[in-house]
Length: 329
Image 1: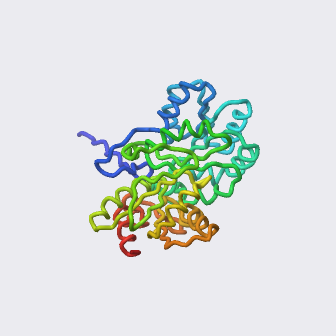
Image 2: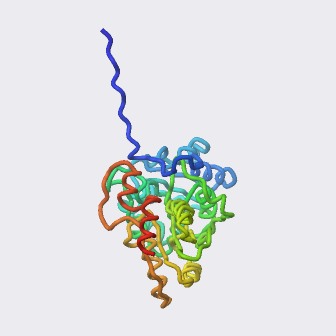
């Protein structure tokens, strides 16, 4: 009698690719960018809270084992240690999931790192709705939590090009930074738009007369696809990518929003406290008006499940974006 080994059930809910079918991707762009930077700069060190494989920090660990620190499941200790490393002149990149860096270790980030203005780079994986494992792992409010922290630079890259350029830029930038990490097989899109990442600067990727998309993070890739498809409906859409949430490029947003178009914000974050409210306050404080439509996650704890299904349900898919724009016009 023979026995059959049961087939191991797997799920893509935890670490799923955000790339569309057929889209060009780059594997572990953060890990490779950090490794290249460390090849040139001996002051660069890496830390992980038992998640090196799941934050692409394992690429750096394997290339520079003597400069990698495995802190275990202790995010508060990791950020405290990163602060100490920065105090003695090193440039730490500390990686974990966004929920743990923001909810669990906020006080350490605030008082050990931000208050003394130390050059610690916090790298948060699974930002927003990039995992299907429910509220315990979905960092849908990390931008809202961190925007009020004095001196902290916050970056939400769109693709592998953004990440690869942001890593050395953040290492050279004074003070603490927080990077919302896209990991694994990350789309490669911005190389088609003559794009260069600059801290604190937005980039107009395409122009259009009818609608202005102001987007950040992975939603910029969706915005570009939706804009191209809306052109078939004779809707001309501009896309303004805002990779830096703080400091916010108010001048560029105000200039583009003043052109009389429907303004649509797109973010992989709650509509509370993120990009939409950054744009709204920017307009309000300048005394400028615009028809503003926010596309983002609801002010709610989200469901668990497969990412494509969740993105459709919560309005982040390309189809949902196009439908929302058509209703607003």
